[in-house]
Amino acid sequence: MFELPPIRPVVTEYQCYAGVCTCCGQRVIGELPAGVPRGQFGPGVVSLIGLLAGDYHLSVRQIQRLFHDVFHLDIGLGTVSYGQAQVSEAVAAVVETARQAVQQAAVVNADETSHRQGTVRQWLWVAVSHSLSVFRISAQRNRAAAQALLGPRFGGILGSDRYRVYQWVDPSHRQLCWAHLLRDFQRIAERPGRAGEIGQELLTYGHWLFTIWHRYREGQLPAEVFKALMGGLRELVELALEEGAHGDHPATAHTCQNLLDLKVALWTFVDTPGVEPTNNTAEQALRAHVIWRKLSFFCRLLTGVECPEAGEDASAPRVGLSRLKWVA
Picture 1 (cartoon, rainbow, N blue to C red):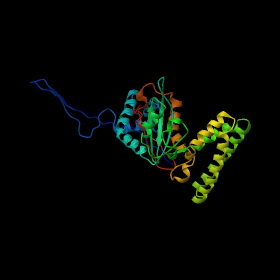
Picture 2 (cartoon, helix red, strand yellow):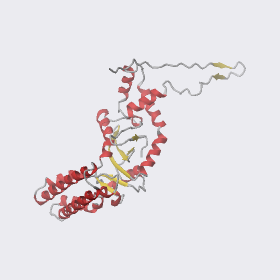
Picture 3 (cartoon, rainbow, N blue to C red):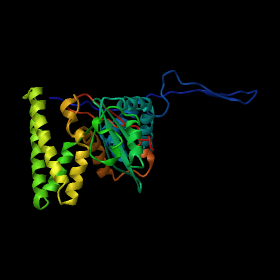
Picture 4 (cartoon, rainbow, N blue to C red):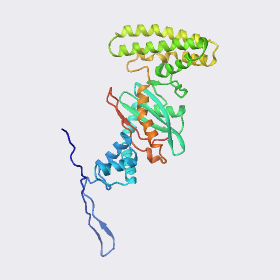
């Protein structure tokens, strides 16, 4: 049987003597011993505030209540918010290092989601490498915001959806998300006539792709067999896209032509180690924020989002760092 011990805060009182010179009237106050932290709460309390807010996504009032109920420590709402700001400032240099590392990574997945500060609509961007997730809040959802996240000279492989703000990256350095493509193919398959038939073909090919990919990733297919199967599948997909691009359904033709223009970005994962056919890592990194957004109804002030994010991925060690104060 496991049990938790009673938790009581450790209180240390420091007394500094003060005096006034009888000659000049100058007031002199003693200094605290070296290593004593400034403020009413020690680094353990402040770091726990950062953990509860950044990783467990508790609100300020929930953190206040937890400290009272579990740790028997009464703490003000303003103190909780101030503790978040302290943690944000403390990790600022590490976040900047993480941002530079992600911009120089060989493979990065990126995504964005809406974010609201009061009544102002903004966007939360994320760039995810093998071991790091870096977040950035921007007032815009455009090319400049994407370049600010990834760096204007980004030279790695970018995994993303087909959103146009990523088009400044050369298609040979991109991997389009096949999970998003399946949704596009499903919409096409629901249309009448030949367009619907083409959509159904593309949908079938997409399911084949994931079946082959999963078998290869699990070690059930040799690399040469995997590449041979993907080569045949590529021919079938591009033939269907060609027919759809020259069909009589305008929306289908537009989608198919766009995919043909980016066709090299459909198959980067076949020959490039570390690249996956989906953008799941970026979407998973944003999921915690989306849940927090739905529960908290956003923040009114910028200080409400000045807190580090932390995240873990079950398949690999990850460090998620975010100084959300970094606003365009």
